[in-house]
Every structure is written in C-alpha cells, then in structure tokens.
Length: 222
Ligand code: G3P
Image (cartoon, rainbow, N blue to C red; front, side, top):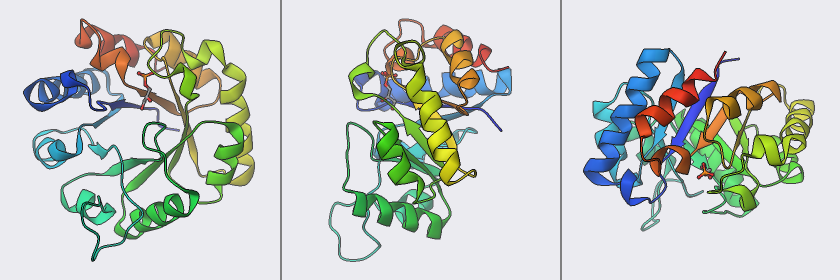
C-alpha cells in the first residue's frame, strides 16, 4: 500500500492563481523532501499549467459523466487527461452527482486511463460505489468538512467500517478518508484505521503556515 496525501484547493482564494501555484510548490517540496506521495487538486482552469510545471500528480476536483461530443461546459475525463491531469475527484460532497453519472464518469476515466477518487459520505454509499471499481474511495462525513475535529477522532468507526465494507466488495480499491484532517497525528491514525491516505483542504490551504502544515502532515506517514 502506498500512502497518498491529496490536497484539495477547492475554490479558496488562497488556492487560486499565483497564490495557488505557490501553495502547489509547497506541496511539491513536502513530497520531494519526505518521499511521500502528494497530489494537488487546483481549480480546474489551472490544471494544465500546474501539470506542466509540477513534478507531483495533478488531479481535477470534478469531472462530469459526459463522454466527448456535444456537451457544452462539461469537464470531460479526456480533457483532464489531455491537460496533463493524472486523476480526478468524483462526487465530492460539495459537488454531488447522481449514481448513474458517477458510474459513467468512473468508466470514462478508466477508458482514458486516469485515476478516480470517488468521495462518499457514509459506509452505505461507499458500498454502492465500490461496485463501480474506482481507484480510490474517500469517505468524508460532510458535517466534519472544514472543521477542527478530524474524522479520525470524531468518527474512527466510519473509517474502519468503510474499509471493511469496501474491501469485502473489491480488495483492489484503496480507501482514503478526509474532513478536519490537519496534522501528522491525524494521518497516522487514518493509516492505523486501514486507510491508504487522506484528503485535506483547509488544514493546508487556510493555514497561516502551509509549509509547516504540509511538513507535519507528511511526517505522519510511517
Ligand atoms: O476534499 C477534502 C475536503 O472535503 C476536506 O476538507 O477542509 O475538512 O480538510 P477539510
């Protein structure tokens, strides 16, 4: 199992434009210095530029279920791939999708060969999405997102329960968790509970010292 730390810049001002790129460089340095896999998810319009300039993988924050063709304003998996993206989040809590669209998006990402991180809010939804065979399922209780109490402390049983449920359906899917993750201690706990890494946003993007926050996070990987 390779541990991964995925940093979602969301639509935060600190994660957009020049400031976002500085943040991405901080994530890259933390990865290079520690040897830990770090992925960045910038706002979509920056994906190509970041992918060209960074040595860490860049994922999209969202793709639509649409295939290529007559779909105005959609983000297609193929456009993410052609832009240099190596993967994408799907069904994030702040960008929910219908199950039929999640299925189409995962299938199209598989066809164009990019990784998929399907986000879920519960063990039940995790089980439903496990049958779609994404690369990762990331469990994130929505009420803890953006807060100060990490999911690893507030709901450890949801992480271990999701790991058990997902692995019983498809052992090949790696499980991630997120919501309120801020420290290396949180990352260590997430791994102890059976996950292969974390999704983090405000703990890095909104931090007064993102460099320190990133170095602390990677220090939690054994
Ligand atoms: O995508 C990760 C995210 O939803 C978690 O947000 O701010 O709780 O780290 P945050």
